[in-house]
Image 1 (cartoon, rainbow, N blue to C red):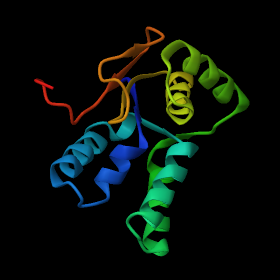
Image 2: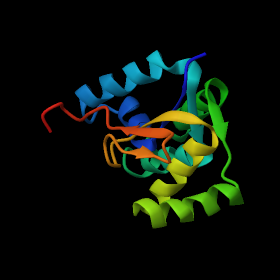
Image 3: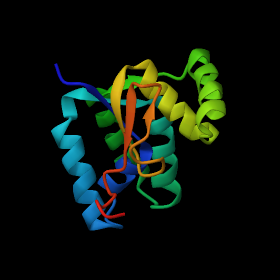
Length: 141
């Protein structure tokens, strides 16, 4: 069995928009490659929906179709008080923002080994369990 992979909101947005074609292709490659092992949280679904409606003005019916597909095809983790409590610990230990700490907390709760995110510290290993990878980072950056 492959390791579980947590996908942050920004990769979903790139996968469903044409703002940056290189990032869209990379995000889609990751979603395809790890399809059976992807974990997302209700936070990711909500953030994705908000951004797609507000910033990209997606039709609500199209968004509903995409979200249904996400929920059907991937493991969706709920945000519990334990998730929030762990997020507070992560803020103190790693100086993450609150929302980033919720993402990391969800990934840890679901025993993911990798978190793909553009927004966090590339290469950081959290709690000796979860590696954060920015898939858009060039080797020389």
